[in-house]
Image (cartoon, rainbow, N blue to C red):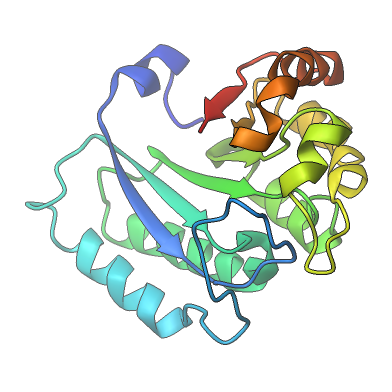
Length: 209
């Protein structure tokens, strides 16, 4: 467990450390802030290792009781092998250093959900089950979701995401999603929130504009 009790974790002040592991993504969401997505800009293990070593050996600069290691992209699960290697290294160094964050850490992900049922992703989840949180972005109904969350050929991604929601909620029943609002889909907010509840997403959704 991350903490003996859930309340203790929530009351702690956690340090958030973010790894942008790739700029690549399967989608070309119309409201995405990340321009110039490509497969070439990805984090190397050496860069991640150097950052981890610096952070974990400078306790005086990072005095928080707990830590959240965030993995973002692009879609981070495109680099699941790299992430697995990074997380193994983090756990190894926490143990070797008898670090205060040992057993007081979380690996956090925000994903488009397309690779959630991938065997490599599922193996990673099972390996780190008690120390991870995962958010899948689904914008609501198929009509609203597919207005913006599209593949590079313009096709909507709703059907490919929603099929992974039951497994996600089975593994993380308290998970929440993020709903991004643009001017074109404002009329669909109410029906989309109700739709998310009907899918079983009871915690949230977090709405962004």
